[in-house]
Amino acid sequence: MSSLVPVRFTPFDLDTMAQTEGRIAILIPADGKMNPAARRANRLTKGAVARLVASERFSKVKSGDVISLAWPAGMVAEALDVLILPRRPDADEARKAGAKLVKLAAGKSVLVMAANQVRVEDLAMGMVLRAYDFDVHKTKDSDPVGEIVISYSKADEAEAAFASLYAVADGVHMTRDLTNEPANVLTTTEFADRLAEMESLGLKVEVLEEDKLAELGMRTLLSVGQGSESPSKVVVMHWNGGDTDDAPLALVGKGVVFDTGGISLKPAAGMEDMTMDMGGAGVVAGTMRALAKRKAKANVVGLVGLVENMPSGNATRPGDVVTSMKGDTVEIINTDAEGRLVLCDVMWYAQDRFQPVGMVDLATLTGAVIIGLGHENAGVFSNNDTFCDAFLKSAKAEDEGAWRLPLGEGYDKQLKSRIADMKNVGGRPAGSITAAQFLQRFVKDETPWIHLDIAGVASVSSETSYAPKGATGWGVRALSRFVQDNFETTGE
Image (cartoon, rainbow, N blue to C red; front, side, top):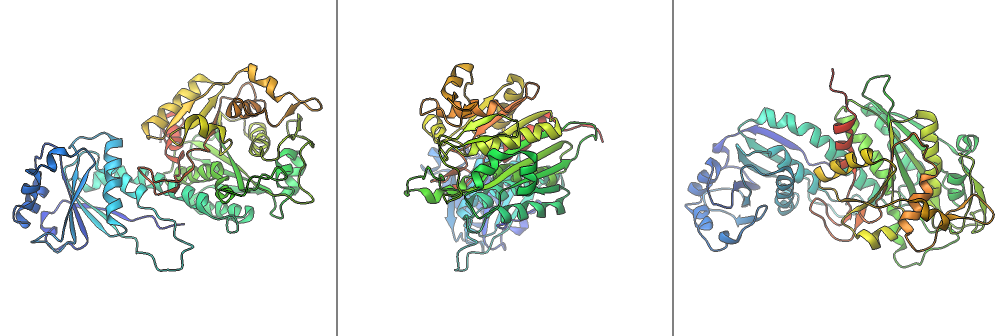
């Protein structure tokens, strides 16, 4: 994995400021009132901070802005970063400010003189989320990862509060790494091996190979990968942190490590981006890592279907009919609508084996969701209002955009097949909805279910508040919060 920037919390000590190298950050609210760290920096720099506060530039600042004073007099630091932040920000405000601060550091160490700042753990979370660069395949030496040091009046309390956030950030970084990896590196076998390594964190990991999948009847999943030399697999990750009698929450991810479209070949332009078509499986993997690292008191099972969709003499053809694990038959109209074929078998298996308390599937499923929602929100579909509302609340709390879209029997007619129980596509109208409607046929009546179409948010072409361009890790924070707020036990 890419290196996670180390974070230390130390007792607040003004005397460290003069001799600290690298970058030093002080926090000043928009009203210009200076705390002890700002006053000490002002004395060391012979009034430079006060002159900044009195300037016209400062009168136009907004929360989260950073003004840098390079090579400040009276200090050995290469820069004094003045972060504009109210003393009592909300979590989102603090995190975004931290992200802006660490972006300026460009891999250098940062000492944050936080004094008695409220939500300092969220400030640090934003810094860790943004301090990411996928450079493992670059031959030139990259800048070393720096260190974040938070000088704080209640260092021990902040460090304890930050521990679970750091675990979640670790999961986010894992999801980004997986989603950014090229397909010649992240084969189905390599993907499964990386997940198996998480047994060291306390997860139980099973890898189901093709012979077992055939025995189980996962023929729709196998049909997607049969044109590839990479073997199809299903990986099952168990986190048993709750009561032994509690049914688990099931997380199911689409893991198409590369999607050519199969015989229904995609256009060449932009096909290189299809390395991210395993984004749903990446989010499930990162979430399971986060739950294990923060020792979540809940039972959660993560299942990912790992396949590669390639054209070959053995590939599935348009017009073929395959039988799902459930027993329903599917006419394959378009081999590029393969993700739902992977998910439907894994979802049925998850319900049959685990009888989960609820199920959430994630997939970079349709281009149509990007047309509808752009890159700001994932598409959300559900058969249960209470279950769905709880997730949307968690996503909002973590500032991960999610918007609910409808389901309805009226869309089913688009999936009618002349020769099988259903087609795998319903045409261009309501493409994201008909894809979700297809998946709903594989959800048992008693299972609360959410489908998340993350095609627009899993990987983006421009930077976000918390990530450089590329993989975002969207969903790990929301799902970890969803588990924390709705499924964790409170007892010892």
